[in-house]
Every structure is written in C-alpha cells, then in structure tokens.
Image (cartoon, rainbow, N blue to C red; front, top):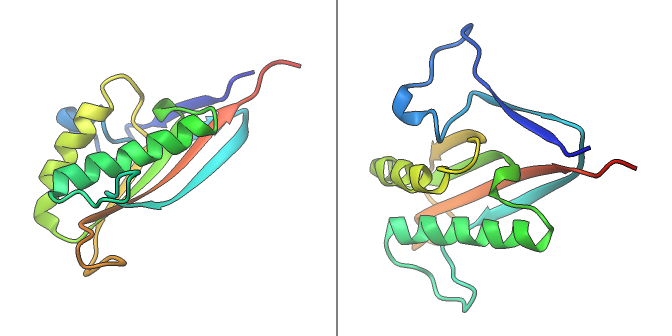
Amino acid sequence: MPASIEPVNPNTVWAVPDNFTTIYSHATAVEGAEKWMFVSGQFGVAPCGVLRTSFREQAEQALDNIEALLSHAGMGMGDLVKLTYFLTNTEDAVALAEVRMHRWKEHQPPAVTVLTVSALARPEYLIEIEAVAAIGGTDA
C-alpha cells in the first residue's frame, strides 16, 4: 500500500493564509510509509561544484539537489513531509516564498520551518535546506 501523506491544518489552530496554502502546512501526517529519507542540509552548489550567486539561484539549486537525491532513491517532491530552511537574511523570506510557490504547484505542501541564522558553513552560502521524505511500499 502506498504511503498516505496528508497536510494537517485543523480549525483548532490559526488558519493558514490563503496565499500560503500551497506552500505551508502546520503538520504532515504520514501513514503506511515503508521508506524514509533524511536529506542533509543542501546548499546552492551545482553538480559541477559551482556555487550559485543570488539567493533565488541558491534556493532553486538547493531544491534541485534535493529533487535529484529523492529521484535517486525512487522518490519525488510529492514525498516530502518536512522541509527546514535556514536563511542568513530575513529579507530573503519573500523570495523564498516565491520559489516555494513555483515548486509546490503540483504537490501537497510539506510541513515547513523557516529560520534566520547568523551564518551558515561558509559566508557565501545564503540558504541551506534540510528535508525529510517518506514513501510506502506495494501490497505484498
């Protein structure tokens, strides 16, 4: 049975604003998952080793890296259940929301945390993204 991954947004907590319902869920419930993947923090470094320059480019590349890792494990962006974003500049949250809105047009939004930190592993890194994904097996 495939895993069931559902957003959890009950009316007993604050309502997610309409313009964020495609990119944010208070929680994600997973049922029947047989395979989990925990993705280490990804930066905006391309497969060739080049760091993208702008925040938006780094965010897109980090998500591309996550998508490639998921694909290698037989998973996809729709299998993500939790994303944690680490930004070095609070003002980049607007651009991040735009990137996320573009990415999550076709999938349920995973649970999300966005944090602003004073620094990442290298000063030129503007964003780091951690991910958790889950997928079910097939009927035996």
